[in-house]
Image (cartoon, rainbow, N blue to C red; front, side, top):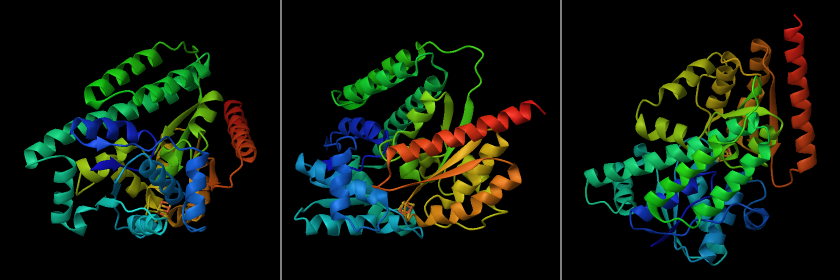
Length: 363
Ligand code: SF4
């Protein structure tokens, strides 16, 4: 089995080390690029959501490197994600590729199939092996997310924010040369060390922005046109409402009740939206209120074109913004999104927030 998976932010870093540690042959997809998007755009349906197009590109690039098995999480929610594996399999078949899909569906879709897939992936004989392996995976995911978050914090405060980019780019290059969990942890520790040595501005109070919206678009920098970097270079501190750590905490670690943080967001959203609308639409509404209550300066919603849950959330966010006097901007993203127009909207939003800050400061 030569295993690959979608490229989604830093997930590949943890996944590569984790599966290598378990003795699987891993062929991670190359980092997302224009070529990845072009492949997906060419072969996926025009109106399907952007993450699926990118994933098709990922899979083709990995298959061409030798991958024969694709790992994907499943979903039973009322959005298109539940159909991804079926659609993707059909698209790849039409293109002449024959690969195996391993889909980790939610427990509600059948325990036996999930158990069989997990045992095979984890090279496990029993539940003890699964739990041991899961511990390693959890440490890797948490550390990969910690580095992403640390880099965002450092970029906002750094005297030279481009120094952070250099450290991160070097980290991504080195990831490809590592093998297994031990080497990856060492690389991660040395990256944390380098980030902590970046010189920062004193007595600086950055604008604080919460990134909310569709999970893939929030997590994957290529898809959101490196929004975290762009904001960081403007001296803006970014916090993401969704990360792999938050996802695992909610859907796996705290199963079946869900994590405290996500349950809080559901409660906060209730006056505006009482039920799940698929994807993270409900969480987007709750996260906007969460950041307003935490004293953030504003929130940016990322919406891949045609994403149904985020369209629902978008229709509610103006009410949240008004009720909490909290600036919220929606960025709609697809393969046609142009960098210049995108940047203009971000700069205009930051100007608006600065003006609001000044108005508040002047009483
Ligand atoms: S959340 Fe939105 S973008 Fe993601 S699969 Fe569902 S509809 Fe598509």
